[in-house]
Length: 281
Image 1 (tube, rainbow, N blue to C red):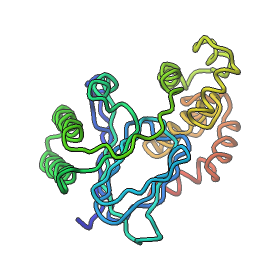
Image 2 (image 1 turned 120 degrees about the vertical axis):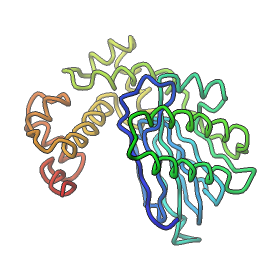
Image 3 (image 1 turned 180 degrees about the vertical axis):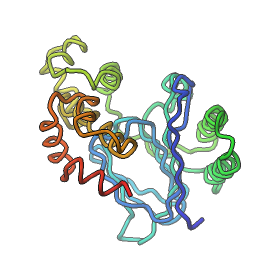
């Protein structure tokens, strides 16, 4: 394949045990730096060339046939291994689900790790089959989430059965301790909350909570909250162009539009309006 492929799914079936958020192929993978991680489980596999993954002070080479499974909110960065190749072709999957932790716990895969195919191109061929299925089902996408849930589970079993565990990345144990508070923040970030409310919800001191968040994400609990608000604000800026900045500020938890604009510019380097104008054609 030489053409870039990307499918995203705004599934209404968030109660499915496991569901797909996105799937794609990049002929030429770009440089990515995600200090706050990604909000879903993320599978990234090399098809051609080499990539470099940086995670928790580790640098790992992703050669052909190697893939990494990253747990949610795991700070990381990756880019082509420019010392050896100018091209790095990849396939990827992002996913979550109401029972995702129980499923991956049962498979003993609920951690960030690098896997190697024991049969050449087995994972890649399976993902290509998913591309073919999605293309064929495009006119009939009403129930596609259920089919993709099945295929995603099959893919997890495939990795478990035919993937050799090359490297189990350093597990950040503090994430298990703050997982409930992260899931709570995902639900209540539009509300008028701050560090005090987060500490009360976690039932630990603000100092201890701050240490846990810094150990896990490299940022404070409040910075993590703002990150969630920025993520939703960017989505709204692009998906509903009729919303005013005041509307968006209120929907994502800012009391004043001026505070929203200032925070957005400090985080993204441009104003919300400039962001919308840049991405909405």
